[in-house]
Length: 73
Image (cartoon, rainbow, N blue to C red; front, side):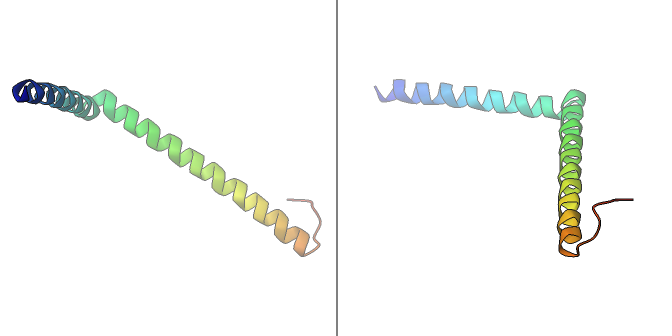
């Protein structure tokens, strides 16, 4: 009974290791590199959008606090 249990554990572990190695191999290739760069550029673009929105919001707060016109140049 113990041998069957260890055989099952070994098979499951082998499948997990095989999948992880396959993922690592795909990530190292050119397509994996393209995906990584694409994700990075999307993240940078999203971050820049959030910064711009925060700057606009803060500028509106400052203009309201200083009672300046709402006209922007």
